[in-house]
Length: 220
Image 1 (cartoon, rainbow, N blue to C red):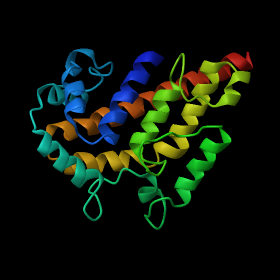
Image 2 (image 1 turned 120 degrees about the vertical axis):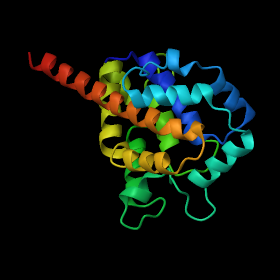
Image 3 (image 1 turned 90 degrees about the vertical axis):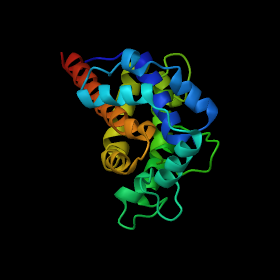
Image 4 (image 1 turned 180 degrees about the vertical axis):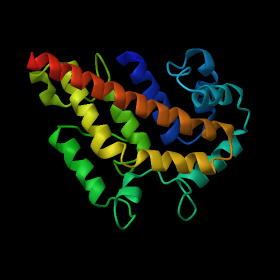
């Protein structure tokens, strides 16, 4: 299934908000306005994804309950049940801002990419990486590496995004998402797990397929 870039960008922005932003009346209202079962572009890609869409459409947890779930999953006290930072999974120490985080910092820096986050979070926060994906998929504006100007925008950003997923995001995202699925108490966050995993896997397959197609065209 091939999804256009505008839809891929929109999904990444929604998933970023759900992973990164603490529950608020505004966030809950945003989710309530989206008919996931009818309009999520990957809604019919698997029974688990459709079930997740239906959970979001029908979720009625209180704001207090969502905040409690968000806090225990992503913040603590102590070690959160679903640490959203890549270095926890990829570095031998399991600490924040370790070797894998610095590798991602260098990748962004070499790309001319500067993050402007409202929170002081390590750059390998899964929610922040979804924001980078959304911006890189932007067709008119967004945080696109400046040296991309010397290439075909769509082709080069495909290669850049494919590398981001292949080397920096997918080595830890499935483990992180599995912890979310195992520990979430509300339908809101239970649904987030299959939606995110399915989106990232679908995006990666599409990017790698596009790259292979571009390579074949170049060879001929």
